[in-house]
Length: 134
Ligand code: ZN
Image (cartoon, rainbow, N blue to C red; front, side, top):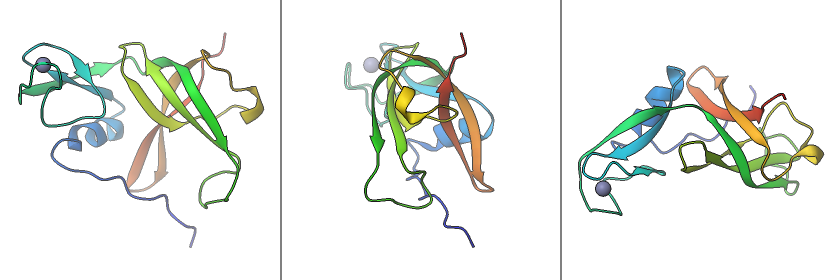
């Protein structure tokens, strides 16, 4: 049996994210008090300290803010090299994910990317990112 990806930590602050990924939505937590977006999700707003929050459905588009091609050690089931990027979303939050559908040697800071919801196994759908074709 192939080795599965590690399970994400899901709790009452992050459940909405994982539900969204399964439904094909890229969600970002929003403070009800001051409307500021935040990621990673948490119980309280770091801006105004409100405990009330909801979320928006984001565009799923952004740019590569930073990245690393992880070579060693090889950790199955991840690819080698494993391209890991910090994505700056159009909405202004940052999100860490894998880049797919690209030669790792051709990744550039600032390149436009978009989410591709990927069922990596029957119980886990991840928001991976691919380059936007010009
Ligand atoms: Zn707030």
